[in-house]
Image (cartoon, rainbow, N blue to C red; front, top):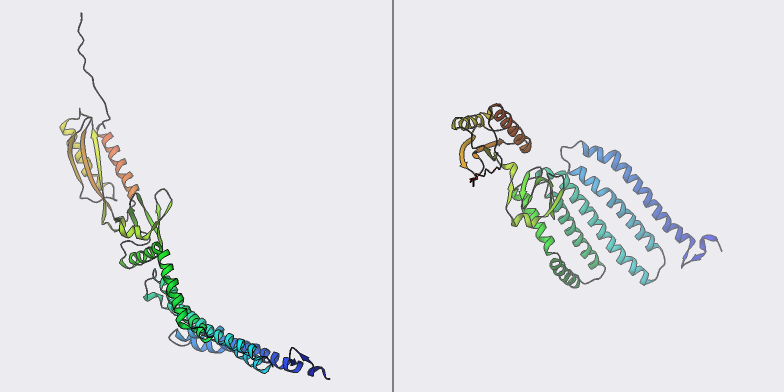
Length: 344
């Protein structure tokens, strides 16, 4: 008996070799497809004025090559002598893989299309949109593949429905955070880079995620706040202020003469001329007779986009220098006790 006619696992060596050659030819065809796509089709597509053809070629290349391999394996398997049960298994697997391959192409093409035209979409919503669409595409693809394999659609939908309710109940807080994150992005009460004040925290918004918002506080600590808490609370967007109002109370000693008090007020009103970071519309008034001091209330406004703490420091230095030059003394808590001494 010739070697090619010998039987292994129900098929001759010749039959096995023919099936193998079909797969090898498919591999060679795939190499040619990759070369043609790279050196011919993509170059032609690059000359067009739109990007859809480029996206289509990039997205379709690997699924198309996988499809060629599936067809080759199908013909190779059909050429072999196998039991009906094995043919049935291969047919079901083939039907599943074909649908999965189409789903692969659809998800890749959708993802690339969203990324290419992301300029028309809110960048913060882009990851959510992409993820949601891809999940829907894959759910449809997997359900279709299982249906092609003989699984009842009704039972699949029932399992998905029960599972969806269970997941929703278990992830209520997560869902609240996600919807709150979408609301923050769309309504934009604040943006990344804004300085906000929330509860006892104040700092710069570093990131607005689907679950939480990260704030960099002034002591250089990252605070992650669940999005639903930001939606339910009052958040002050400091960066949105046209200017920051600062109220300073200055206490002078009780021996300060009235004309020196007026001099102190005049000095405060001239401060904007020397500190560019504050606006000209300041307020300085003799406001209180306190327990230990004559109090002047000084209200000024720091210009937008100026560093608040640095501006306050400059104003305080300017006040301190001018008051010292004018001989104005700051008060501190003191107590004088008068005692009557009786000589016996």
